[in-house]
Image (cartoon, rainbow, N blue to C red; front, side, top):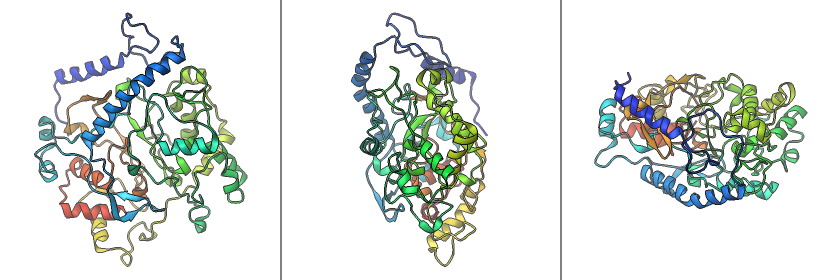
Length: 470
């Protein structure tokens, strides 16, 4: 049950949120009053682009320093690879709990408390709170440097933002370039040949493996189109006018590179959620699309992403910046057809029912599986063989903390979030919809607290061992 909240407390939270929404637009004069809250972004930009860029470049160091200070306060960001667990092509999986606890308390002590006690004593770990965008007031697509470098090398297209850098260290991100597995040709294993799929090489790599519709869909998934921060207008965050971004700039090789953005379907700005790019692997067995939008087909998602989400959910701005309106019967369908043949990575210890083969699994992994289906309550939402129930659930994390502003992000509640698949989960860090959990150990601690399962240290270790087999 949610803890009672006083009217005064609600009033304070709302006042904070509304005040944060009343941001003076970048083209306003200093002596003008703050704009009233609006669902729309300013269309006409009166500040010269060179002035905007110089101003934002000058503010960049302080913005990133603030974000990195928050991360250092929340997490142990050191590179601590697991000795016995790697991703498919050899990148080490990061181990250990990285979320920092409040001083003077242990995980066991915290798990023994009621949610209301944790909230009232302000003991909810900072790393379990919503993770803000590096500049939440600005938002927008933001790419890790390795993706920027590779796209620039292959396509001469620059995904660098002059106002921001990516924040999470590379060792907490997925393998790059990621391997590609096809449901239609499982006999081939990884068909990427160790390359990042781009508009330059897709035909050479996939001609003869895909049918003509799938090839055309893949071409469109790799084709850059105008987007909020990358476009040809003066209202952009790239130094030069940009052709835009492609679907696979975030979903690199049909997987994820950890790129981030803000959801387009929430207002005002402080309440928008950061997005951790999810993998497209296993799309053929998904029935909900978008962490909260609950779109019912990947065709819906593909079409609406181009029309709205690329432009922060504002179709007015989309028209101004050059929205790419996809044709549903051919282009959207072709793109979906390719996405739906992206398979999970191999899981050699799993039987055809998605459970561990006792002849291949260790005692630790088998104990972890028993916990997953029992005391830990994981299988309530993450049912085999693909470890999802294709539903949405509200964890009501707000039971554990009082609303607060964190670097421009109003941490109040998450609401219903779709159940992400756990097949191949060790390949897809960081975790939760906004990437606030850096390791599987962090994730187990988070759900142990949220679900009040009171797992022992040994049980948590067994559960992590099982998750690494999926």
